[in-house]
Amino acid sequence: GQNIDQPTEMTATEGAIVQINCTYQTSGFNGLFWYQQHAGEAPTFLSYNVLDGLEEKGRFSSFLSRSKGYSYLLLKELQMKDSASYLCAVNTPQAGTALIFGKGTTLSVSS
Amino acid sequence: DAGITQSPRHKVTETGTPVTLRCHQTENHRYMYWYRQDPGHGLRLIHYSYGVKDTDKGEVSDGYSVSRSKTEDFLLTLESATSSQTSVYFCAIGSGATDTQYFGPGTRLTVL
Picture (tube, rainbow over the protein chains, first blue to last red):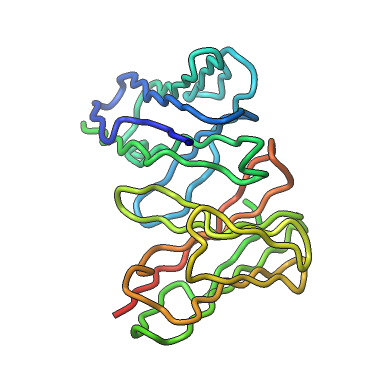
């Protein structure tokens, strides 16, 4: 079957760095996405990884290791507005063009 | 932001009544998706469309049907709503497997 695991909750303080891990066991792999979702709002796209390595985009970076079925999202210089859920999602050949989502990690940033 | 809207945004209905949710896009994307989001489950795919009149089932399709008669509209119908279908429904659009999916604002449906 398809399985994507993330920690349920994390806490951090303003200005800190936090790493949100995602492990996946899927039949095939086309790419991995990270989305941010504030409470009561729609998910918004953060990053996409298809090759091994680190993708950096401002304060956010995402890493992928296909051989380990592992990714992480790194958030630097945390701000209060980063308090949100972070969703890891994988596309596989079996899923067509749809995404398989993990249950999400709720990050709380305190001052 | 992608031009994608959902209607209604909130709906309360009773068990056994039919319900139709609408997703409308102005981006001319080929693919459209319906997901539901429930606590403890994350986002799960209900149905998706890969073109006008072309649709396929997702992980949790039982009790739902869809239609796509125009590129810009994707309808999700609950023929006879049940309390287990109380959820937040998100529509998404995209251009392919490796392309970003963009989500609509969501519809909060409560079935009493």
